[in-house]
Length: 196
Image (cartoon, rainbow, N blue to C red; front, side, top):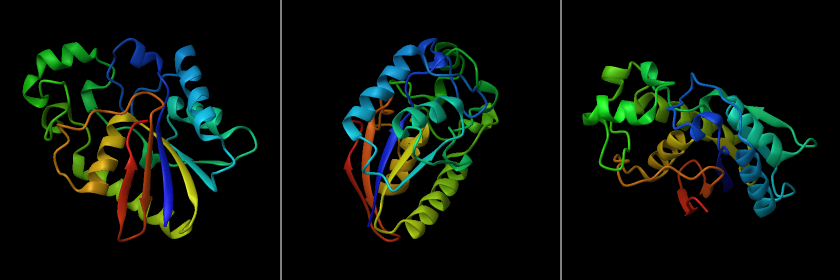
């Protein structure tokens, strides 16, 4: 059984400015974001990991580098990139919520079918690439401990892939540098904890 520690990147400059950032916006970590990654490192350590995978977007790459250190190889995989918000990428979050209220719930969680107006990813596209990623990593590391650094909405879609809940409304995005632990085989998927 593969044990995954799935980490959301630390606070980025766009997070701090409340800018919607998907796969097209590539801002670095803030000082707070670097500090959050250091705290996560102290919680996890790096000796436990047989492999480290991360989104190639700067905020995730920087987080993975802080946690992984200079002596570990990090595999950057584009399947871990953030959900593509299409034409909404780079916009102020509150402006998008106000302009397109039918695509968000009362907690500002993105609802399915937003891609109709945003021209971004569909849930199915992202879930498909995530399934491919996890199938491949489980086959490569069947009894290993694997660190994965990705993004808030993508991690919500990972939970949907694992739990097959189909409705993300009641799942909050993990906090910056939050840790989610999951154990998986090809046929079995168990969430141990979410967003610690």
